[in-house]
Image (cartoon, rainbow, N blue to C red):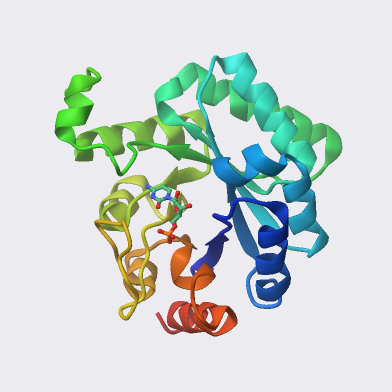
Length: 236
Ligand code: C5P
């Protein structure tokens, strides 16, 4: 499968989210709903995206005790979300409980399996910050270790930075899904992203999905910006 584009709906209300989805859904299949928008609008924003026949990545990074996260995962599935994520630091029991709950529901309802992603180390964390919360491994070893935990528990893949694609692809194998934010086309501003890669690099290195926000949502011509990124992905 070619690398797919997910557009991040990082806007504060339903109206602005719907304007983006209405405009972009003819060319973009996946939209990411994060904490800001979901906290403001709730499940209605997922229903709105589904109304445009688009798919939702619910980026709420669940992290709680196993039963609570498994129930949140089931609520996501019942809402029609096709991708969601959980913190790998929730532990292997929590990860396995989520997968067990999802598999049981899928078996009963015969609906398609969602993509369940692990969040390893937030890209805002460096080694010093990790040390201060008691993590002694290097960032790289922590990412690989947590990704391995996710794979063993049956998760579909992880969210990772562009700089981690090659390493994770090599260590985790070809079927492990890599979803990559922090993407900037060559001509775009970096904004607050530090370790950016281009859509072409991400695709060539083995990303399955890239997440792009501001380079599309704040472009003067949003459809054109999305089309250019899609064309880069198709050429890679
Ligand atoms: O506007 P921009 O393309 O930087 O948006 C990237 C999106 O991906 C945002 O929703 C951001 O929260 C998310 N993200 C990220 N880096 C991570 C994880 C998620 O930029 N490590």
